[in-house]
Length: 167
Image 1 (cartoon, rainbow, N blue to C red):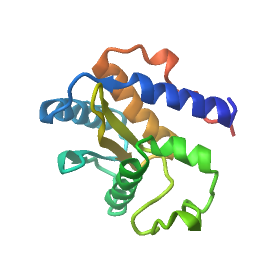
Image 2 (cartoon, rainbow, N blue to C red):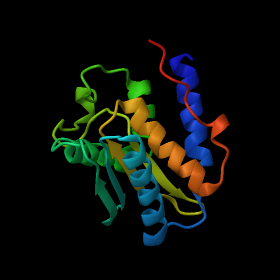
Image 3 (cartoon, rainbow, N blue to C red):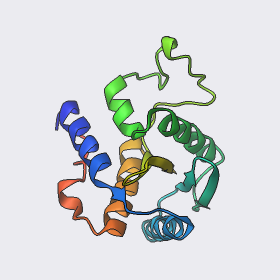
């Protein structure tokens, strides 16, 4: 699949994976589902779910490391600024150094181009928070979040899942 096709599919994910409401209980359900999958599949990830004003769920799996929370924090900052998925921005920006263009004025200590941050969008309210996963290759981090959202929202993932990355 070409990059343009991936970007179009991620835009479809962002438009489709929208909540009617989102609160602490929903965050806990989604975070717990990601945690359960990570334990079952031995995924060395951290999960960080938050609204703009506070954290709602955090879990670190065996095998995750001290840098994963910082990667998640920087992904969260990117979603907060751009209100879109970090993997979409990776594909749109095409910057192998993982930084934004100098003209953006974004400090690399606080912002990173890396997949795994996905906006929490509520119908009628817009983007109110973020779900971040860190620890796998970025396309897989992104996929873990999308899979969990599809399952929670009872949406068939077949039409929304990115195919494996072409090597």
